[in-house]
Length: 259
Image 1 (cartoon, one colour):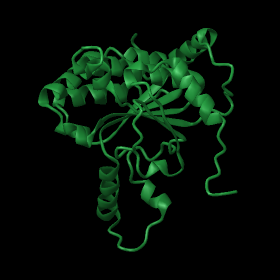
Image 2 (cartoon, one colour; image 1 turned 120 degrees about the horizontal axis):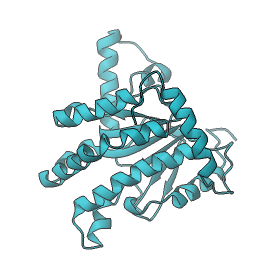
Image 3 (tube, helix red, strand yellow; image 1 turned 90 degrees about the vertical axis):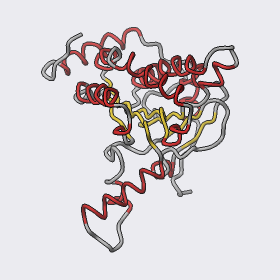
């Protein structure tokens, strides 16, 4: 599908209209009260594969498809932003063979999935320092971000070579360089220097694989997020599981420090 800047809106609208006719929504979900931003800590790819006697990289391959599925499902539910923790700053400590396999998966699939993003109205952005990735991988990511920049149905925020502490330090350094200020700064002003500062903070953060920790993810943005720690490994994630998470979220009462 060849979608240009001029016809993205028309193509996107046509696809959304066709999707609305076939998408099945869990009747327990109130589509008027879905979270604006859902973030996923994609945990358990390697363990999922190992339990099945498969190489770890096979888990990453299936995990990649689940990230695309999660974005499309959230878009169907009317969720405007989906963040996925795809590669942390600490993941560079993994064996080089595993890193090469992860990069290979992105190379083989990212351009192919460009049509999927365009058809489903998904804008792709990145949070993290992608300049450390191989040049050809950077080019593919930049191409996808450029081609989808006009999409408005949902934003897929790829948190890659991302770390919450690194993001905060980066913001502090940028404030110092840009403003040359030494006095106090407000939370609102500080947040402007974070990655993709125009995105809302996550309403719901979901971590798979049963682990109950944050792992340096969106440390500033999670201040008032709701959390769900679910047992299935990331490659086992399904649309039904996502729907159940949204139902759980809608049962909660968010107070934001109030009574």
